[in-house]
Image (cartoon, rainbow, N blue to C red):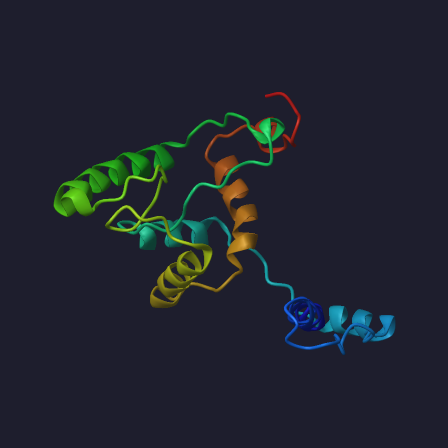
Length: 174
């Protein structure tokens, strides 16, 4: 992955005429070496239900995500909202209303669901920094946040969302 990033950066440098040639363009890692690296790479399991619960408890009172557009209409579907999520959203809206009043005209209403105290949406890096700070401060096991999606599906399944709704792929009617 580092080689791919290096090649990409050097391609941009060539495009911007910072360098004349991408010296990494012909560098290839042998298949045998790639397979050996994959075998030694540690697999990190997603959080279990208890870890998800601990993270949710630790996050109370913080804003740590924003909505992401689906790839298209086929990717949209309705899912039942577990009581825990519904209650958290209600608490969030109450907190957001207080922050809006406190900030006055300085509050940015950009339409995002979870934002900072002034209504500004957080970017991906800011979200990761906040999430990992919560993880570290609460002694939770670090996982890639991208992999936490599997934990979310498990959580939804354990809280009454039917399997056929969780298994729906894009284009599948619900």
